[in-house]
Amino acid sequence: GDSVTQMEGPVTLSEEAFLTINCTYTATGYPSLFWYVQYPGEGLQLLLKATKADDKGSNKGFEATYRKETTSFHLEKGSVQVSDSAVYFCALGRGANSKLTFGKGITLSVRP
Amino acid sequence: KAGVTQTPRYLIKTRGQQVTLSCSPISGHRSVSWYQQTPGQGLQFLFEYFSETQRNKGNFPGRFSGRQFSNSRSEMNVSTLELGDSALYLCASSRLATSEYNEQFFGPGTRLTVL
Image: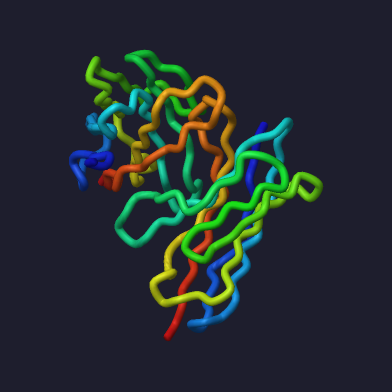
């Protein structure tokens, strides 16, 4: 079945540091890939998505590229802010099937 | 446009009791999905409802059930609660699409504690 693997956390960075959060997936065919963010006490918010190979999703300075050859969808940001502190989830979905398969999530803490 | 709302936000129950959680999707959204979030297992898909029918189901025991009403509002029920059912229960809604992925919008969740 489908699965998503995220790098182990937590991650602590200083403000303005470069961020990379690794995500790889196992799935047949061509799933859609997503990054969701969860701020303390809140539900999940879609951060960005890519629906086919080589697509680049971007939002709020975050970027991720759908790499079919390496089955990866790593999240990057050039300069993190304290307000980016949250839990980040990589997820996989298929077509009109609304089921999402999530990675374990990683907690990011950004210190001033 | 109002987002997905879930009630109650917090709930404390004891083992053996049952509980009902409610979810109101975004207006116009016809699909509602439920997820369980725990520190150990992460986010796991429970089930999805569309047009009052369960369209998809995860690997949870029969104690977990749900339903959807004609106005797309959904409820999930957990019977004979166990300590391990303590979790954040998230609801997500999306529109119907036949081929493109439906973006899912999540509610804030209901935090269930079983004592």
